[in-house]
Structure formats: C-alpha cells, structure tokens
Image (tube, rainbow, N blue to C red; front, side, top):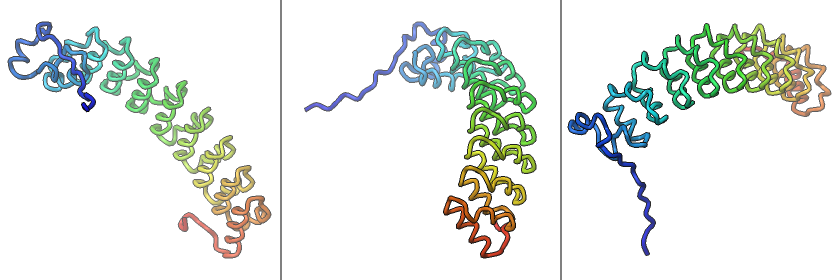
Length: 254
C-alpha cells in the first residue's frame, strides 16, 4: 500500500522575465520557488520584498493585486497615496494600515468595511467622530471603544445593542441615567452595575429581573421594600438578605 502524496506544488517562475535577475539572483537575494517577486505566490513575494524592500515601489502599479498589496507593506509611505482609490479592497486595506493617521480621511467613505475599520482604529480623535454614523455596526463599535468618554453621547441611541453596550461601559457615571431606559436589557444591566446607589433606584421596577436584581444589590435600604413581593425569587432573596442585615451596601463594599 502506498501512502497519500501530501506534497504541495510550489509555483516556480521563469527568471528570464524578471528585470532584477542580474542583481538579486546573482547576489543570493532571491530564489526560484522560495523568494521570488514574479511568482504568483504571496509567500514568495513577501519574502522577496522583506529582503529587497527597495524594489517595492516598482510594483505599486503592478497588474497582480496581491503583488500590489504586499508591495504596500514595504514601500515608503510617501508613495502610497496613489493607491487610496485602488480597485482592489485588499490593496486599500494595506494602504489604510500604513498611511499616516493624518492622511486617512481620504478613506473615511471607502466602500469596504474593513478599510473603514482600520481607519477607525488609527485615525486621530479629531476625525474619528465622522465615523459615528457609519452604516456598519462593526465600524461604529471601534468608534465607541476609541472616542473619549465625554464624546460618546451621539452613540447613546445607536441602532445596534453591541455598540450601546460599549457606550454603557464607558459613559461617565453622571450621564448613565440617559441610558436607564434602553430597549436592550443587557445594556440596562451594565447601567445598573455602574450607577450610583442613589440612581440605581430608578431601575428597581425594571421589566428585566436581572436588572432589578442588580439594582436591589446597590440601592439604599429604605427603597427596597417595594421588591419584597417581586415575582422573581432571586430578587426577593437579595432584598430580604439586605434588609435583615440592615447594612447598607456602598461602593467600598463591592
């Protein structure tokens, strides 16, 4: 019985088509099937530019999209602006990753969400808010994680609960009341955990029992009797425990 042949065919380009063969091949800076710029192999192309980065600018307008994208990683930043509108999104993603943050505004409205995600992750705070209305929630999620806490207000009503959860985790405590009636219980749970004991009272009658449970752990003792007949056993239990102990829970005890 013969074993299965697991060998993988490695692309080997014809060196006669390479304009640099007289230098790189003779100097041992490239190798057919391993380190080659003209083979249609991303690994070989990357190895070539890693050893010979000076040649990267020559391939920024190459017909092969992967060769352009890899060349972007090694070419000088000043040469990359011509690729901001490249037809291939993978090339533009590489450009977004390498351009200086001050030049990323040209990609704010790119059609590819991963390009915009990279922009949102790298652009300066002064321009980041321009992506707060991006049509893709993943981009807005990045914005919510990076924006200064004091500038999160425009995302309080975001259409996606994942974005609002991040906002609820980062919003200044004094502003948490603005999200106390969020439609998503998982958002209100975060609000209940972060609110001051005095403000947690507003959530004692929340329709979600977990929110009530969290609020009951934090609210002042004198506000808890309203939950003694709560339909949820766990809520009643925490209320009775706190009332029987007669020991207020404050932030220092958490």
